[in-house]
Amino acid sequence: MKKQLLVSLFFTLAVVDLYFYQIDPASSLDFRRFNPGGFNNNPPNNNPPNNPPNNNPPNNPGFKAQDPGVRGGAAGAGGAIAGLSTNESALFTATQPTFNEVDAVPDGLGPRMNLDSCAGCHAQPASGGSSPFVNPQVAFASKDGGTDVVPSFISAHGPVREARFVKNPDGTADGGVHDLFTITGRTGASGCTLAQPDFATALRNDNVIFRIPTPTFGAGLIEQIPDSAILANQANNATQKRAVGIVGKPNFAVSGRTISGQTNNNGNDGTIARFGWKAQNKSLLLFAGEAYNVEQGVSNELFQTERDETSNCQFANIPNSVTNTDATTPFQVLSDIEQFSIFMRFLAAPTPSPDTPGGANSIANGKSLFTSAGCALCHTPSFTTTNRSAVAALSNKPVNLFSDLLVHDMGPGLADGVSQGQAGPTEFRTAPLWGVGQRVFFLHDGRTSDLVQAIQAHQSGDTFHRNASEANGVIKNFNGLGENQKQDLLNFLRSL
Ligand code: HEC
Ligand code: HEC
Image 1: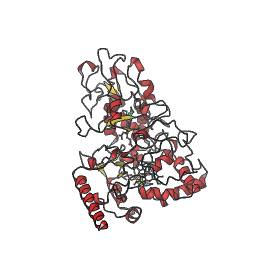
Image 2: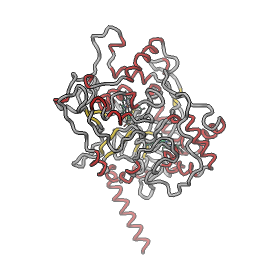
Image 3: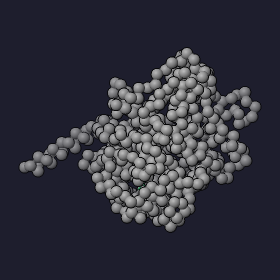
Image 4: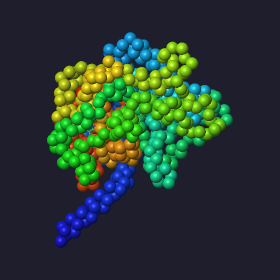
């Protein structure tokens, strides 16, 4: 009798759950169960530096194995890809200063922005990369007479962050970037007075999420992976993917119980988008256009209007940056967003170290454990670019990115409640791991600098609530490794 009651209760719950799920996955998943306190700004390199995410595995084993920290030595990235033609090389050299260039109000900076240059955020370990050790956003708040307050989630030794609000005040989905800073008080902006967004209230209401910069090394190779290769890889290893989960049908009934990542298709032409934390953007040109307007407030040929049109805060023609039809050399004709894209497209992939940290044997062992534990079921070690690339140096080349470029349900512990394209509130692109050895901050919000924590954060939710992260089975495998094996795997990651 009792048992029957339980069963029917469970059945009712399941039906209710299912009902919600079909109507609105965003509201049926309690994504707010992540720990807002997890968004702390940890100084880099102190192991273990931070609060583990809320849904930390109950069996967190108190590892002896440790993240060796940011790999020292020369930057293994930042140069041009091998095999560029003379003209292409010249273009790489000429466009790098544009990527590094710092914009001011007369150039169209603002009215609202997160910083004033691409390379300021994409800095580590070289121009094009990710968040540096020291966050330039702190000094930027008061640069050139600026009167902005540094929001509480930004600190000198924390990651560069942009902020998105999850919901609008009326409860509808927002998801958009709310820039941290304004041009108020800055040189060239007289007469413009803008208030910063009310981050304190948004934080109190659990309504703000963060994103850190993703590196762009090797991004030209990622652009040239055919959609067909991504789809073929998605279908690969189906048995193993099922084995670490339960069943392999990518629908609501088994969501989160098996590795069943989806592509995030571009709204305009239906092909597979692949850049950004949710694989929300199709190409480097599109990302460059969006970043110029969103991060720096510089409108351009892809994004023609200003995000904030307050009339006494416009100090440059609109769009702010365009093709220069008066230029006399071909390079100067190119608008900034074309130049940014070319620079990023020609950036070489990061070069892994053969023996640091831990020696060649440990790294080789870690690499095979990475596959046997199941990490490689999502972090696909390698793709090959199309053999018909218009840039010969990008044609038929290996792309050792360690990502399937699919978005996966990562459970409530990582969920941010924001949907982008077909990527839902709990889904993220498998983060490419090339270059991880020299990265300072990890995961979409930069919540940790410790690889052990980044790995543990993959695990949250459970099958009973149908909110299990697709990675739960694999993280269980990782936790079952011996301490030396874990260390080998961590050494392998820091060799990348
Ligand atoms: C305030 C910091 C900041 C500035 C300035 C900035 N970015 Fe970014 N960039 C980010 C963040 C954060 C992301 C991740 C965004 C996301 O996925 O939500 C990102 C992601 C990217 C990516 C995606 C790479 C990948 O593989 O996922 C590209 C490309 C990019 N930025 C280009 C640029 C360019 C070009 C500029 C200059 C116009 C620029 N960014 C300026 C913070 C910044
Ligand atoms: C189900 C697919 C999946 C599996 C399995 C998986 N990962 Fe991930 N991994 C992801 C996704 C998605 C992210 C990005 C999550 C986020 O930022 O919220 C990520 C992020 C990471 C990061 C942080 C990278 C960055 O750019 O910040 C590391 C390191 C990492 N994974 C290592 C591993 C290791 C080691 C394993 C195996 C023990 C593993 N992953 C298994 C999908 C997976």
